[in-house]
Image 1 (tube, helix red, strand yellow):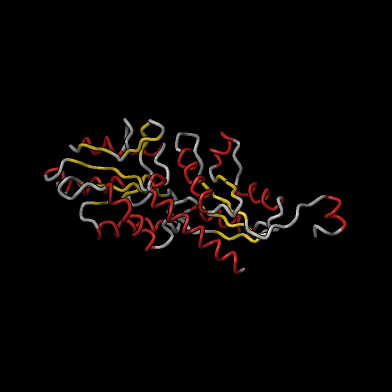
Image 2: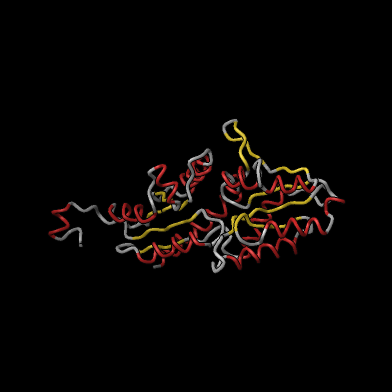
Length: 283
């Protein structure tokens, strides 16, 4: 429908925009982790002020609780506002199930040319860069063992499992005092704890640090990693370890430190957005 045609004039369609809309696709949060999204929004306003910024949320549970828009709803809003192109930048860490769902929505949404940015750990170099930033919170080899907590997936056939397995090997090869396991699926955390027992690590070191490799370290950190019952912390404490997890203080309240609180990670995600915007300029 042309905005200058008869129907377009009758419907008062907005003029078409030349620049693409920028849509940030986040899992979403109903907790204090919302502060991290506000922080990313502030970064966008400083460095991408030439673009109009929209948000979309991939968690159906979060959307039901908060009334926040889905990606489909945000794309429809962008199209109705007269945009011809949109760049969608996810805040997801790995290209798993949710990322593929975002891909499908972007590919089949009519009326817009949609360009999808890459996740934080979409390439092996990206993973190395992210680990390099996280090193600042690693215990030194003579201080203790570090356990990177991946989200994981319960789906055995999900292609992202090969990435999780690759991260497990990459971490073990690069850092003798760091191991990786997933909350769901593989690498299996119970298997990791069993290997630690067999190798007698507790005979040499007494400290274990759990470091979430997640954008938010909210409910999973509170319950699955550091909870009072059936958590990684309780399993490790039964083995004899003293356990901690990096923390940050936000508005005078302590929070578990997710990747959102590393300034370098914010920069990495901005780089992914910059690249997607560059592609949008060519096509």
